[in-house]
Image (cartoon, rainbow, N blue to C red; front, side, top):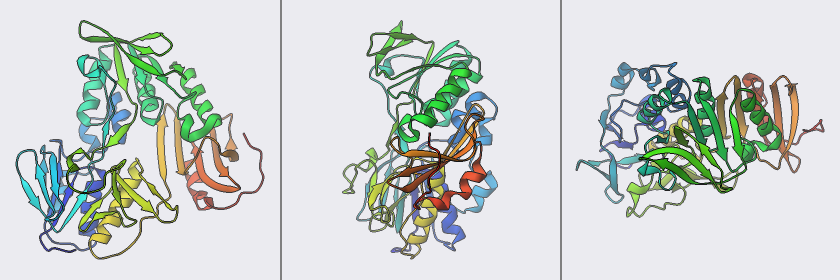
Length: 394
């Protein structure tokens, strides 16, 4: 560390808490502050679109750590006070309330902000889902409604659609892709996902762009497609992606381009690091810059950042990984799948929806997907980067 005055972690997120824990685990005993924009104690985000939204979990169950574990960190928690600026020369974080937190090292772990649709702010009944409060507000609205339209055909949109359908609502999913997650997973696997949603009663209105929202009396009544069709709705959930929460860094002199740009050590400037969804770093094995939005990356990157703050000089070279739970499907993906890859089923049965598939491009395995076979998929993770033998393809 370059300064004995301590470490400030901006973001009481999974990445932020994991950074603090890794620092203590690796022997750091100096000053440690964790700054969070929300008033809540740190919580996990993956359950928000599933267990919390469905009501299967009390919100407290989504907490990242018990209070005793947070106390054991011997950290100052500054919650409900968003960061609004960073002086990189002095490594001073300024907050909305006027605090100035100076440190020897600053870790940016501010995550994402959900995108919205034009006109969304003027209508009740329209939701995004990023925070715990978002999830609770959406749940309350769903319980008082019968028809829901989910705008978005990615991971979050598909999970919300599955949860809302499980709550008994009539659910329509709208989006530009031909099937849910078609972009990353490709037509064969995404087609299976589309079949699953259709069988469970979700109406898929995909392959058409959303042009706007319909409303009456200040309340949303539907979603307009560019075909002219209006999908009726009591509740609309907008899940059209998110952008890195870097607005507070404007004027800092740091490079902001689809995230906080960092070197291979996740370092944005002297004494300034980034971890989690907000970090865009140079992956020196892949030879390109990456930004990953998943829970596993937040933890792994935080551990590397903590090590480098304490004097290591290690590059971050993860194998990307994400998972999603939708209805009874548990899908785990290691590596980088793509729609144009060859898909090879190597274990299990496609028809039974329990299988492991390899993605291959130019003769090289680029990803492993497990559908209700997480252990078997994990065991094949070392094959990523290897050539694959011939096998029947989808």
